[in-house]
Structure formats: structure tokens, C-alpha cells
Image (cartoon, rainbow, N blue to C red; front, side, top):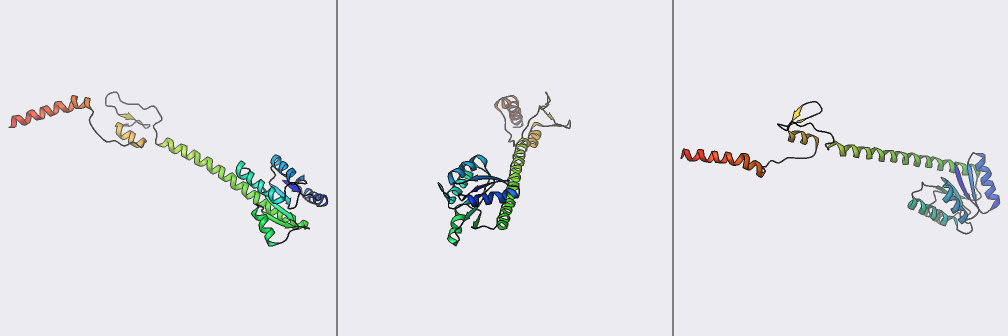
Length: 217
């Protein structure tokens, strides 16, 4: 795993580098805030150890810039450990408010540092698993929505009788048009009489009925 180290003290920087490389981490070194920002932007390391008091851009400003980038660009969350000689509660609060995930004071203990890095790795792994599951869920929802959109649509060639206008289904059964469409779509029917059918069928029947009534009188 890549780890960005931002430390302007050469001795502390080399100590961090040697410690992390000993345990198999790939170290990206930077000595000031601007250099760290450039390397973060190009490398996108999942974890960073940032000294608070560094030149050209302090650690908290660098932390804020990383968080802004994640929100705007959609980068994966970088687990940030702030390293500093500041020890007051207010300093810890300021560091966490700036977006840091953890806070370590100098001089640091190697075992404690490694334990915090491993804790960060576990959180990174959980985030990646969650992101993966969210993406899989989004794909599944997309497929379900597509399938549901097709369930209520007629999307095939429909055999229809030239005489009675019944429709043949997939099992070779014949259905009235209204019955078939109701079963295979969200359409509902209300019945009426078109002008042509009124003239052709209804009007002659009304004349016959009217004539029959007159004879009875």
C-alpha cells in the first residue's frame, strides 16, 4: 500500500520512511505542503501521514484541500494521520475538524504508529468493500428497473386472427384483444361505440326496435 509522508524534518522523514518500508509499505516522500499536494494529486495514496507544521502550506490546510478534492472529484477517501508536537485538546479538535482521521504526537513510538496505520488499513478495506457492494447494488437495481420496465410492455410480434381479432399467446391459446392486453400491460379498457359502428350496427337495430314498438301500439 502507498503511504504519503509529509515531513520537513529530514531525520523524522527518514525514520518514518525506514520504518514503513521495513513493513512492506511503498513510501511517497514530500517536505512541504505544496509538494505533498502535487504528489497526492498524481499518486492518490490511500493513506497519508502529514506533519502539522510544514512550509508552504500547513498540514491542516493540506488536509482540508484533500477532503475538498474528494468531495468535488469523487476520489476515494484518503486516511489521514496528523503528526505533530501539539498536545492540547483544542489542537486535537482542530486537526479532526480539518478532516484528519487520526492524530499522533511527536516523538512517535514505532509500534503505536504501525498499530494506527493497520487500523487505518482496516478502515480503508471496509470502505472499499462497501463501495464495491454499493456499485454492485446500483448495477442490480439498474437491471431490475430495466426488467420491470419491460414486464408491462408488449415487445413481440402478436399473431391476431383476421376474422375475430383474437390474439394467440405463447402457449397457443387465443384471447380477446382486451383480455390479452390487460394481462400484458398496464392498459385498462372502457367501452364505447365509434361513429362508424353506430351507423352500421346500432342505428339499424334502433330502427328495428322503434318499428316493433310502433306495431305494438
